[in-house]
Image 1 (cartoon, one colour):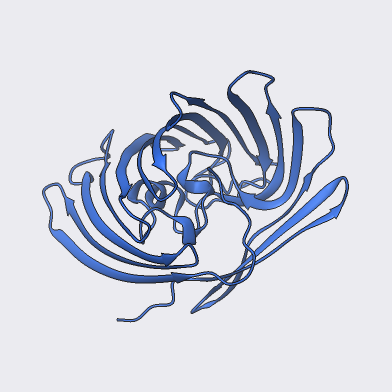
Image 2 (image 1 turned 180 degrees about the vertical axis):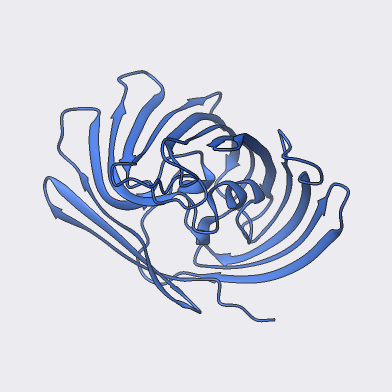
Length: 290
């Protein structure tokens, strides 16, 4: 049937020469959420920056993206399984440092409330979550850029007092841009999770990889492959998913996407879905993550 995936209202402004603010409200069929609302410093010593409020944590590449810039219609299987439908999105404080290197190299670390139900949400008030990310990018040529990242998150879960959840991730993105309207992106991301529980330690993880190409101003296509269950939890918990997609854009403000998705559980059934999605933007819109 017909679904309203999201209406996003963004308010972004410079407060003064030292701070800026970003607020994103997400309207769904069931209500309104504050997706992000944070302030960011603008004038700290070279290389340092602090942001505080509610924000999408710097864990991997997919988790930091808003729904309208997801490379596919839906969130990928791995992020949705590990962090849940809302992603890793909490109130806290982040400190980042841009290293003075000839190439891009950045460290980001956060202390957050630890509210993510699937992983943290510890039983004591002081049970925060701690994250760190090191990311880098290198221009291999005038048209090719490689981006790398590694992430980690730690916090206490709600299975019992003192039970720790540890999550690790690695991501890679290769961009080829011979012209403004033509190019290919290849991105791969792996996430591994380890949860301590009174009954023992549970480990799971998964891999998501896609190729997205655009051969003209208006037309593009993509293919995504995913595997959840590396390592596998129990029997029948390994899921394979394949998603081809084609896109049509009149301008950068309006896009139609047609996507098919097949998910198969090992030793289980097959689920088939098809999506036709319309995305449009109105008014000024700040640049998204590269």
